[in-house]
Amino acid sequence: MSSQLETLGHEERSRSYDPAAPLTPSGNLRRRQLFSRLTEQLATAAAIAAIAVLVIVVYSVIARGAGAISWDFITKSAPVGVAPALVGSAIIVAIGTLIATPIGILIGLFLTEYAGGRTAALVSLTMDVMNGLPAIIIGLFIFTLLVSVKGTFGLGQSAYAAGVALSIIMLPLIARGTQGVLRLIPKGQSEAADALGVARWRTVLSVILPSALGGILTVTILSVARAAGETAPVLLVSSIGPIDHVSLNPFEAIANSPTRIYTLSEEANPAGFTEAWGLSLLLISFILFASLGARALLARSKGKRSS
Amino acid sequence: MSSAATPAVTPVARRRRSWRKRGDRFGDLTMYALCAGAAVLGAVVIVAIAYEVVQGAQPAIDKYGLGFLTSTEWKPTPQFSVFGAGSLIYGTLLSSFFALLIGAPVAISIGVYLSLLAPRAVRGVVSPLVEMLAAIPSVILGFWGILVLAPFVKSTVEPALHSVLGFIPLFGSPETTGSSVFTASLILTIMIVPIISSVSRDLFSSVPREMQDGASALGATRWEVIRGVVLPTTASGVLAASLLGLGRALGEAIAVAQVIGAGSEIHIDLFKTGDTLAARIANQFPGALTELHIASLYYCGVILLVIGIASNLIAAWIGRRFSYAGGSLR
Image 1 (tube, each protein chain N blue to C red):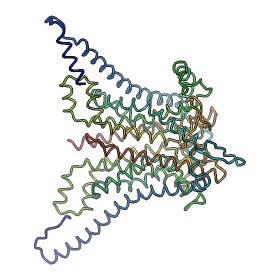
Image 2 (cartoon, one colour; image 1 turned 60 degrees about the vertical axis):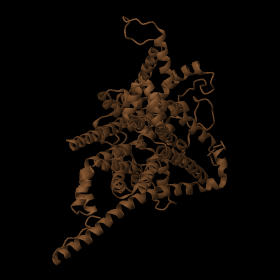
Image 3 (cartoon, rainbow over the protein chains, first blue to last red; image 1 turned 90 degrees about the vertical axis):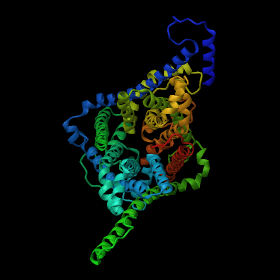
Image 4 (cartoon, rainbow over the protein chains, first blue to last red; image 1 turned 180 degrees about the horizontal axis):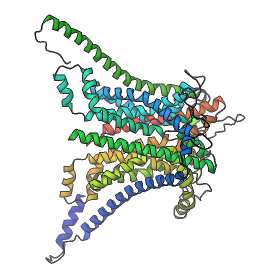
């Protein structure tokens, strides 16, 4: 870069001085500015491309799935509708959330309130590794632990096994998210509580957690949205659920939306494809609305804090 | 920790306070134990995952040892029952690296755009939209890949690439279905771009404004500021982000299983079918019959687990070891 600047000065000096000349760059500077503009445009193009892909995917799902959706599609069982898959998804995600949320919040608290630098780094690393584990491995693990008849608690495929698998997906998201939220809380609040002689656990329960509630809710909704679409961990532990009636028993295999879409996509059956598009549309709208809602909630709680 | 100083008080008040103190001590201890227990539980789960998966793979590990990694024969039918993950490892690496090759530059450019170029209002819209891309479930992306992307790749992209770059063996003659390593790479690209771009956006915004202004004051153009100041200060973080993206691509099972075509041979040609470790597990585990077949799939899981943990640890190490500009990863 510095060499370029030197050559610039050299060129300017070699040209004869013309006071009437317009102040537009020429020569080397002009080339550098053009190149700079080109790279800026490439970066913009990359962003546009990413959004274009999003629009194309969402548009395909809407265009092909909208026709399939009707009241019967949502409320009836096979062959007309997909109610068992929707209810099943709701059940396993609920089980996952019930397990992951309290543990995740506790880990978040541990990271911000209790752990020292070294321990916190270690626990954060554990959460990151857990988050980076291939989802299919979690499926294998839960299969060995809770499904396989040779396993420790093997009962065959079940909704609760699927819920536990999803909770492993959600746990690091909630823990790290909670940590992020807790970090944003002004230190002054808990310091004031300390100065008043309030015990730590009371501070946590009555000062820290209440002011972090909105953020934690956002984090939970985001991880629910993520878990609702996960297929790999569920595929091995709850893939043979009944689709002809709504099942509510958590100790039996249960139908669920992602696995159903996967199964249908592997069969070359046009009617099945239509059903899968419809189900995809339902799933993707739930996920997109949940993430948008969570973001709105976050923006609102942030706005409240700053005002 | 809270009540260190004790002023003079009446005996009754003192007794009441001592009860309260005892309660608080119990409460503090419980709270700490719960939090620490939850943190330990996280570590226990990871260890348990590693243990169970290795345990499941034991028969295959005993039978094949490390030769499993290089052998390319995978014949699950009971009369053959021969397993080797060579072609799967090849497919995994090929598809993921190709995805990273396309995805990383695009994602870093998006990061540059969002942190340095876009006006604030545009940023507020584009940034969540790019992250929305990561929210699309892989199964829907894969399904879209089968029915929308694959036909398009087959009819348009493959012939075009073949006619222009056909002299490179990677781009052979177009295939009939569109299910190929190439299509899988494109799907993986879509999945990793939002991950890398959101991390690099945060990294780029953390580069001190003064350094950029200094370079501008010396006459550097915007590109020269990015090339000379922003990228070098964040290089390690960007590398770590790319590794995270790579780890995600290597471990993706569902979307890849849907579009890669489940081929068992090694092809240099990207347009032919292939298979990856994760996709093979998703494809064959539900229908696996023999014990050796199941154990071999677990063995694939072990390889994935090692790759997954390694890429995360290396990413974390790079992120911490070389980070400048407060480069926290998440």
